[in-house]
Image 1 (cartoon, rainbow, N blue to C red):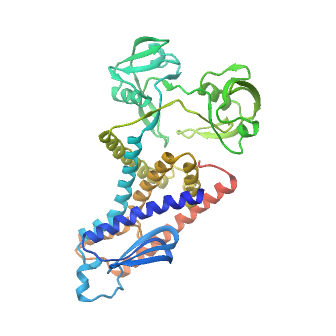
Image 2: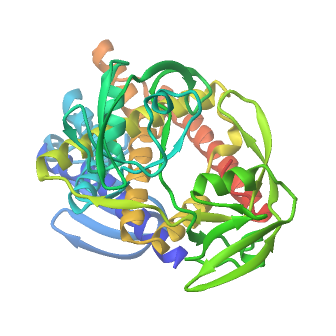
Image 3: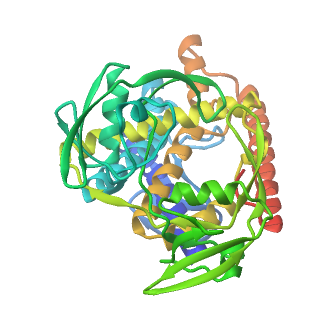
Length: 447
């Protein structure tokens, strides 16, 4: 399943990328000689018109070969109008740029259909209420259902987040349902400094609540303390060491604070109550500000308390484009942070990691698999635009220099740059493979 899922994922993304180059080359009058999925020796192929369509042996890429793309190509005088290297800079730029852009459009299309078919969002029920928070001061309580915020109907937790973020700290009127009664409470969000995923200071608008998650097990990871203790999907944890458990947060607070300490769990399974003993493993958790803490983990995930939220086509398209753009920005920032060594180099993953994650996401359902495909497509599109020779970004850099100089770089300079670029790509690929192998052998997940 893992290998098949990865082949399907990579095959589709490579096809989309090369299709961009192919269609723009055809549209702009450039003759395409080969369209290949994969590199290396040909497995199967057939020629239609001027183009030979191939599936090659190495499935980690693909290529579109155009007439006149390589300096040594010989051609008749009549063929020159259809040759890549005889086209103006703007045409060659569009052909090169089309590959990464098709990957980004493809991701936006996936997100469009995801939002159109419906995405799970937490129900608008209050779980944890932080002490000394605006929510606590206003009187919000665990179990409250938030029906509206300042006149805007709430159907999911994302509506609450959106209203709080848009408030910029101004007072909001919450209409809540509590034990069958509707109550109105005034809450003033507070502006405070928080940490983003890179450990940098950022402004946060917050009222101090978390969505309600019941302590019901939705997933049990393999070879973990939970699996060894006999915990199963669907179990509801009602007590830990005789302390009553009402929310998922109640449970995680105890487990995180008990690394390598045996805990006695009372569990409701179907209509029966069981008692199990589980010893949380110890894991080092690193906070965004760089501080570390030893926490306990047993290897379970929540069942969730979600509602499926569907969007109309116009809203789904808008959200699809926004989600794609947000991921493009995040990918660019992550590349910069890797160069600055803010993000550890061992977070880099290669083909083995993609194969593993593709299988994991496919096992969770088609929705998860296609969202993962969209994320990889965005990464492929953005990373291909890096100004490294042999990547699309390197070709665009050469075209930019040619446009300024009014003549192309010499063949010697281009060949030297491409050798350097190839060395960089091989080094990064080898390092990513090394990280994958270390994770595979050690059984570690991504940091």
